[in-house]
Length: 297
Image (cartoon, rainbow, N blue to C red):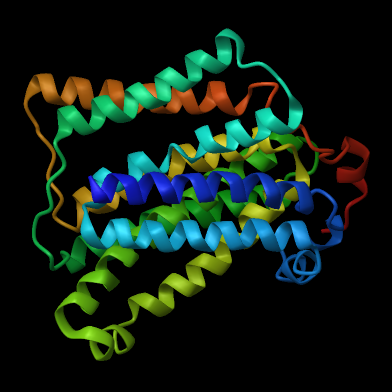
């Protein structure tokens, strides 16, 4: 129960933080798209700093949840951040949920519940399989960088650009969560000396900055509804792949359990899409097609 509460608290902070970050990022200059200079522009905006503060708290709570629980349990719960983003956005826009909003809410909540109940996630070996670790991390991060490169070259389809960056950032965050779990294990076994002498904490910082640039560029270029659903859907998928692939997490593999697990994941993705495209999500200003064409690359 403690792990569940920590993960939901993290989701609340993350979802609220994303809304505030997008409100600031849409006012940043497009010349800094997918550049570290974008963060220097945003750091001068109080709203963005508040959003980052909430995100940092959310990531800290998520790290505690990952340290105490299994990534295959925590990741689906973190995906509920979209529910909290929806709640804040609905308050700001004064839009009613309607059939689409309620359908998305129940699909997301029901999908997470179905996956956890059917899969019964359990931790396995605390020592990761290094061969599979590098293979899976390489595939996930390589896909994220490829998507970011395609988004960088995309000039005419703002919605595609934002969605690609959302997926790329979600994949990076999923790997970051897996490394956070490993770092927690190092700290548990050997304290601070074991933690600071391992490479995972430093990789977490690098991946965090990389994902942050991707997320803020997506928020800068298009409305939140075009990027946050993609990010929210990609992160748990990448995290579960890492958990099962090299962290030793186990799920029930009976025919009935697998059917419910797949159905749960599909319901989560469908709920994320419905909530993300709901009118209550802040539209933002985005970027016009002409601005895209004139933007130097």
